[in-house]
Image (cartoon, rainbow, N blue to C red; front, side, top):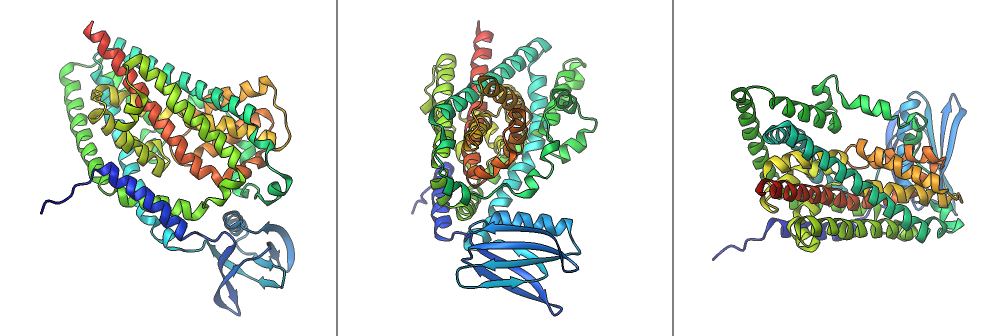
Length: 501
């Protein structure tokens, strides 16, 4: 009997859908706290659920040095606060006092606090392994393919033209994305739709996110200086993609100036190495359906869908902006440059969409992006390996759009009416921030701090959008990687056309 063969993208899609169902079946109770405390020298376990509020007090010789009250359904914020307090006050007594309508529960000497475990959280390590494998391959793949791609362009003139074209397209599409986000936020006004009672239920920003917020400033000169790394190995260990990209471009460009016999030895070796890395990607992708299932299960279990109802208009604004930019902006570019329909294009890159949605990381998706560009879009390696790693580092259209909407949403939430100059400042800062944003999950939230500071919007407002950030991060990564592939396809068309003339 012939075995039924299911395409890998169908397998991944099935894993995605099953993960959503599994996460909904085994959700994490955000109003349940599991912890350990010491009593009479012995460690005890305790679980408290369905409380109305929790007062965390830090005691030093029975004197209160810090106290904070948390409302119900704020487990993540409580855990973050507890871990920060434990780190800052390792020798002090942390005291819990739970309140509900019937009684009060008190516990002294809290030593450990952890989220509730469900089947969806237990399988999360499978998803973490999948992300780690892709991330492990991302940096050596960027380094090898970008060096080979740069050297393969043949001369400095072609190198400069393709590099400049890619840079202009990436920055231009980011500006368009931000403009779409800002205009939609002004028209829909999602920040004005939240009632005061709903505002009171939304947790404030976790303390660790704002601990060093005042020190997060965007300095253009410091940013430019940081590109020129003094230790490429340290940059690789720290996954500093912008520095790695600069080194690879510099290395590849320099190969154009050395004798061909010498450069060929290096490029042949690196090309063979990149082939091995791409084959490793293919093997990792066989694990993708399980990894995607585990990742989505945990995400849905952790955040659920109830928070979407609270911030529905904000979510709609961001998603609508991402849709318009992905379908219309990219669609127009594709139609003009390659005569290709955006929908046919999307069908070819669906594997990239699913992996980027699951990992929320352009860097982790990069190996799949390069493989798809070469095999499905028929983009030559010298173009794909040059343009795509560059895009994964500096092209953050989805992130920029989200930051523009988020900044105006938070301003509206606090009743601030931003001027045209302030909104243009948001666009400028978001463009610069998107170039310097690491292509990993959640970092856009940190960069948002600098944008809010630039226009005087309260940083505490970030806490309002935390509940839906992970879901939106997954969606905006799809836009980011689509933009990378659209620009690569466009440049390939321009480059191949000129060569044929």
